[in-house]
Image (tube, rainbow, N blue to C red):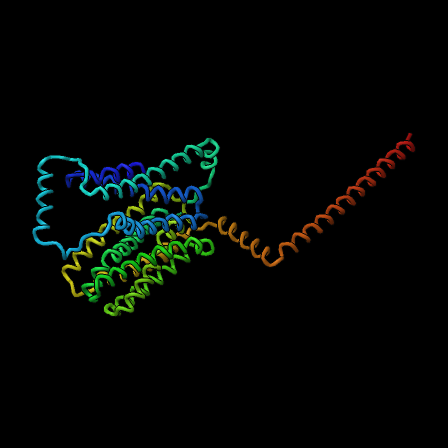
Length: 412
């Protein structure tokens, strides 16, 4: 977060493309580490019980992605329409940029101070949050906390590496499809369907709006639904909506409804996937970084590939085919992952789970109380029998001593 703060402060001052590329690379690397660290921190604090917290974390991601462009537009003010520009208006900025580049100036104050303030406000916000997190880290990093963390038991599935590889591919397709549809639905609606730009912008907004809204609702759903159940429901919703998008690709009504359903279905998959895998095998920093890299590669590679294919085949709805293909891929991969995660259960774990299930059934049906009462009655009976046996032993011992004493007196 500190590196992200530095990047946000310095980006508006960059005067060369090379320096801007370096700063954005640092910014992207720090955001990747932040994404991985946030997921690992949730798992380290709550483990397999942290599904609602994981949903809340990713809801904040979605909320920020939805609100940040709106806040930036308000901060920058109304922009001039492209129709008001003449050809000479586009050449003058290019000449100014080339002159700035030739002058060799790396940093400089931007001409638009509103842009500078927008970056500075967000950077200050990031800095304040990083200071608060660092204070919490110093407060809780005691020896007792470290000893308790080291004492926690870790689980490792028999097919741990295979699960991570499949989750890598799973997130590759999921995040790639999510970013591709959110990036290209505007251009697809205007060129392929023939919508107006205002309608296409509304279609893009409803996708990200339902995406953010259902991530917020997932915080409450995660308290009563298992992560695997939420993944199955998300896969069904995304597969159904993408199928309708492909079949009725030029129907505006179907496009609106299916887009909203598709955004809602894609909302909970990533946080549910992270919470689901933690139930079967413990996820540490390297493991989390591995499947987050898969998500980042999908976010980078699939939109670029679809952009090339859409340019070569403008008459085909390549974006919709990508959504359907990714939904089929994730729908096939999850049952395979579930089979690998549940198959290596050993006998002791099965017996523990069976005893836990029996206790739950007995407590829910009231039989547990009946057994406890019977156990108490049996214990009282056994105690009475023990006392009787002890008394019988005492009387027998006294009688034996008396007979022995009598026999000795007779012989004497």
